[in-house]
Length: 251
Length: 195
Picture 1 (tube, rainbow over the protein chains, first blue to last red):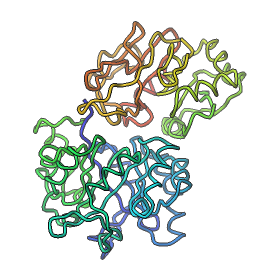
Picture 2 (picture 1 turned 120 degrees about the vertical axis):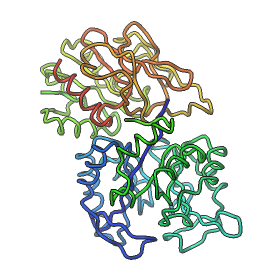
Picture 3 (picture 1 turned 90 degrees about the vertical axis):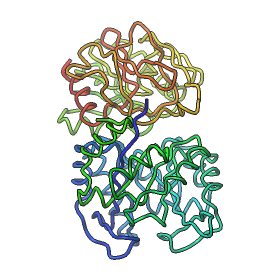
Picture 4 (picture 1 turned 180 degrees about the horizontal axis):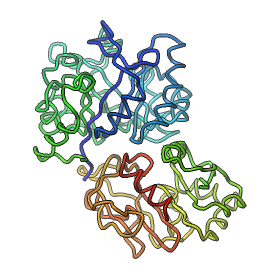
């Protein structure tokens, strides 16, 4: 049976890992490669690196960083942020990324998903969706949840799958940064709607939150940032707790 | 020296990076003479088996690989090319390992591709030296090698029990990616290098 995955997420700005709440008040937390190596050693199953650089210089620093990450770590990793074309994806594949994630660029041009998937396979394409609940409807957002689109979460996730996405990474912008638990009910709905794995993101504050989203929420993987960066929940202890809750995990 | 066979089989830099982390000197090459002289040979591969087999045949490397007597390790699609045939195409492969490669049936419990960490069992031989059954390794594939007399490790995906690794004489293959399988994968590669 495929193990449920624990995925630390690292936001990278101009080559260094930063963390802030809702993109405000960014704080530098460490070196991207060193942190990745340490997480891999601790038992992380996969890593996600998101480039949040706003400049061209920042972007090219990131591509160089991806090469260093690929040389340093021995578990799969996904990179995202600013991927707007098949060429951008190809560059990151050549740098050694196992998967790429697309978000706002896929919303702007959904054919990007199919074009990357046809060329490099569905296993390479993660579609990330940031959504907010507005009067009972989950609306896809861009720019860190500040801009609303005309897309609704469930239909967009379904379309992304049909276009060749290999996984859906859904972040509830209502839960992100709160540390009050994941949007479990929404993940369970996504799981019944989709045949591809769903990665849960946004809201992790305790071991129980992660247990809940992997059982009740039926997510294939739980992604989190701050609880891991500040070692609030050490991964080895988390993995043991998940095993005790009868969740299949890699130990 | 380790020869990594270079035959346009997708992105294989993860194999190079893994050998670098292990401090093993390697050369990425399509030169039959270098491959023949290498201590160990790795046949990587990602993507489509029929296309990969076609590029191997076009360069004559299939004949070269069959004649090798040193340890050879096929990884993922590289392993599938060492089997008898693959349903992906379909295509006849090199026939060094006694398995046919088949497509996973898609079920709600067993998604295709089989992607992620899964445990392997029935571990046999030096490739798995010091590794306990139940160790987790990383898989990404939609086609699998059947169980056969050459099977040296098994894995289950849904209702399908398949060969996670095979061996016949000096030819070894892993369906999983040891180069992406953390410390377990590094140990398997180290065991291969020590053969």
